[in-house]
Image (cartoon, rainbow, N blue to C red; front, side, top):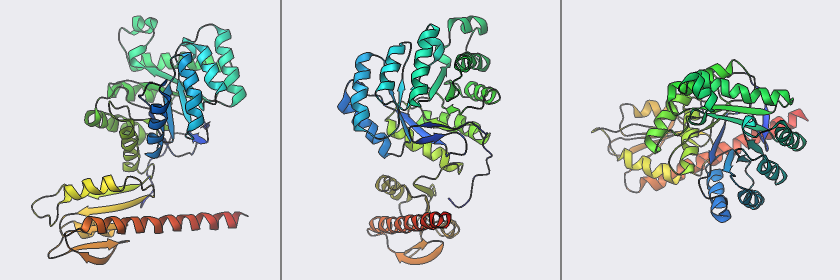
Length: 375
């Protein structure tokens, strides 16, 4: 990224989900959730690994039964990414996954039951250093709140969240994060804004049940973008009726667009027109698929003509500008060499990968120098 984000983030207490810091001055983390049958250990492990390979910092797994808890034990042993267990009502499941090495408990204390059950979960979490996530959802508000408000509202979401927060406060347990999700963008945004004024714990952002890949991406981008621009949010999940890997990609794209997180390539590409000297759309489709594995932050401009191409290329780490009779490749903002349309995608991929290696080597050298100076 060429510049830091102008966004001033809300100050929040920092907790750790495994080795991932959430809140404080930590980068905003990206999460997703498995949609396999948790008891199918092989399938769930494969999906957790795919989500982690896409760059996710944290993965959540639903654990609805004791059989699922036993499966979780096997899953935990086969993956390294921090895992959150999603649990409702049964405190014994929470105790079991805590024993098996869970990194965070997604559990609403008010739904657990009597004080002694809540205390048992909190004591276990405290003993093992496990944070709790309070997760309030507009679709599952208590009957009392439904009667009081008549329908889900931002105020109802806030009251529900604060009810659970009060329980954790009663047991003197501050290591938690909170979400107040709704599928309606304005409701979710208003609820988070209210909550941000009430507590200093980290906030987990999401527009729940946002929809399919296209519609859900748009709704999540709008809702999360509004909150992130306010400086609200310490960890996010984009909820899509799609492959969880797509949630991770969209999450990082949202953060990259606001300069809040750098992960992989930030593409600058024109929508193409009759001035294009190569197939911009086809080129972008190829490059995005081929270069998904790159985690080094870098800007790549792909512009089809010489009107906007040179200007964009000069601001990018690698730039491709369409021209006649040959296209021009820029490296680190300077014209470097020309390339024809024949097999140029293979060549451009090599150029980008080489530049990514150079940037990564430079970053590692700078880190070593900082460590040496601190010693």
